[in-house]
Image (cartoon, rainbow over all chains, first blue to last red; front, side, top):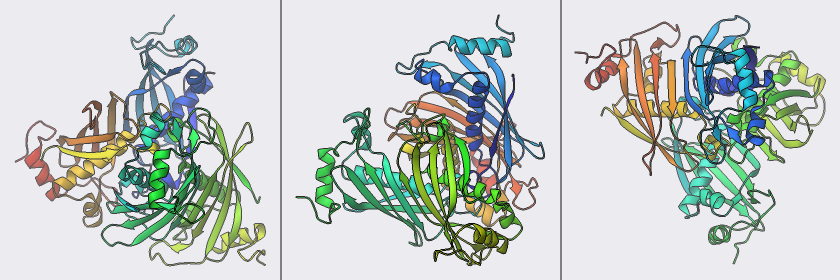
Length: 145
Length: 145
Length: 145
Length: 145
């Protein structure tokens, strides 16, 4: 399942006085998207923290805004892998409005793997790398074997 | 200093499509207010967590909304102590718009003291109780001696 | 359908450094709950604003916090009507963790009906009052006929 | 005043369970930064909306994360102009921790000018363009005359 769609209905709290989803909230939607992407592959971020003692802080994020999302509309966050290496993973995102299927935003987020306590770089968990290898090319543009 | 005033300028991100501060954000302002109240007494929440290993989760919160706060207006959060005991502290808040001095909201928040790891109830730190004793009546309506 | 359950999975963005849902976010969940409650009755907040030109600002909110909600847990927001009159509506909420069914918080929110432009009090829409009348007692403790 | 520094003290609500400022909140800080930048030049976003009937939605945003900001630390948002044209403006941002002066993040945000009602592109207000012209080169790498 290379791409995973996650729905989110826009609340009053999410829109600003222009009547559209505030621009920083797209990054919140991206978090939802990548958590659901991992879950759909059978991988849990929570286990990674609690069982493996690792965490994945964001190192880069970007978003292009194409069309506003209004109160009560349903955003569909489509999440996939843009690239990955042993130490980092880069997701890409498209956000659609469900009914009209209009594209509202695109974005990318890169995360690095760190030990939870020492804050040292650490390779991504093997179980996660195996999933990535079957789905997505790595940073050098090829699938891992 | 029984009452402490803390200013906050309303951002676009804070207002909803009615054009006023969204109702849950007042609780964020209350957090700012009580942190600044404690700081004004010479007490640091951060030290309490990091040095003493205690935390203060909220057990109750309430707010009455009287007048909206608009983008770019400055909210003044006036914070004081409503009541306290060895295990809990209750703050009260008034939120004014700075220029017109109109009262926008009032509220109360009660916190309990817990150990950070064990999540067991724990008396408030002595240094904090001493501050409270000089400023505010306790729950039974009298100042501590 | 007097009570309506709405699920929400807790994101990383929702928890604080105690590792539990931040206290103001329960009010965001309450907004989700009351929007879904109305939708389940066939009533749309969006139409009320856009078609009828009315809005429902919050006049009072309160919450009691009983147990923390952690990252990746699913909150179930159970929404019902506590009371209502021609001009106001008061919702009550219970928030459960889905798997353990533990009760995490209870709360109430009261809203008033205003004209969108003039900000004058206005009776709740008839279509909404009819729904309320079939489901819930009003403020005086009786169902409307 | 080409660069403007704006302080913001990190609240409990701003950090996640890693104990650092959540990644989407930097975009909220950027909004504070650009509002204060404009105010320091004598230009008010609020007047632009209310008096001129224009608005400035974000079309692109990006951020690189270098070091975490912790609860109770003070973030300094340093805001300047990266580029501008008659229809768009691009800000750049650096976020420092005040005491250590460590650089925590850098970012850019581009906004377009639209009419408030018609949502049509509209030139930036003349008063704003005059300010930009005295301070920053435009997109083609030269100052406007």
